[in-house]
Image (cartoon, rainbow, N blue to C red):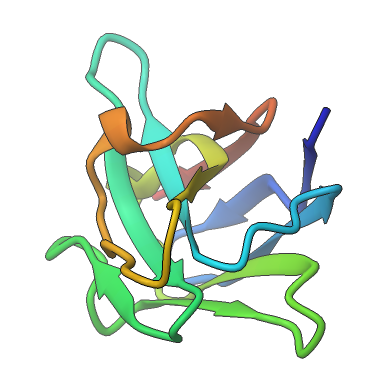
Length: 127
């Protein structure tokens, strides 16, 4: 079974930075999309940033200009660089993966498109 292992969460003051990492194991699909989602208590899970096997990226409006999603050269680790963090960024952050049967890839932040999820890592931003 494919496994996603997350790290990098923690507590930071407003305006600070954090980098989240998601290491993959056994995820070898040629056409895929990976993404970061977040969910605060009492709120629905929302897409934050996505990157697909063609290198295309997509960001939620609330994080554009502050967050950057990327992968290492081997595409075994997914990153989320978070700068200028705000208290409203406080949430549990999840790494997720979606696969596609052929070369066509949909870069998406729709939660229903993702079939594999990490355990989540907590990010807390204090004012």
